[in-house]
Amino acid sequence: MKAVVSVIGKDRTGIIAAVATKLAELKINIEDISQTIMQNNFVMIMLVDASGSAVPFDRIGEELTAATSSLGVTVHVQHEDLFNAMQRV
Image (cartoon, helix red, strand yellow):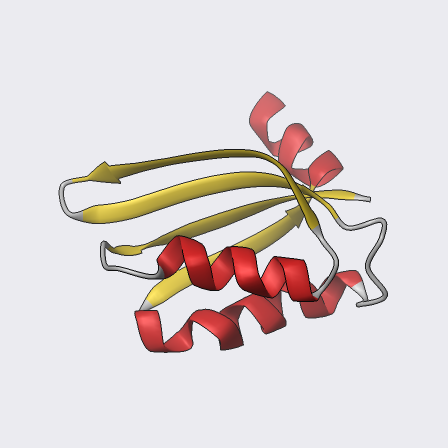
């Protein structure tokens, strides 16, 4: 199962490390990643493959939010099909 993970917040050291470390712990593979800084805001979108993870889909966002809570970022996880459908509207 593939998902789109978005991370947005004030730029600071450790955001990518925290997200990537948690995904690795959950056995979720990052297949594609794009990140940029927009007016001091960190913006990252990732396509991930969670088919190797034992964690239920609805818990992935909770796990990532907990792992990044001290960094002040917002994390959203959407199933790839839902993300693609929303982009077509």
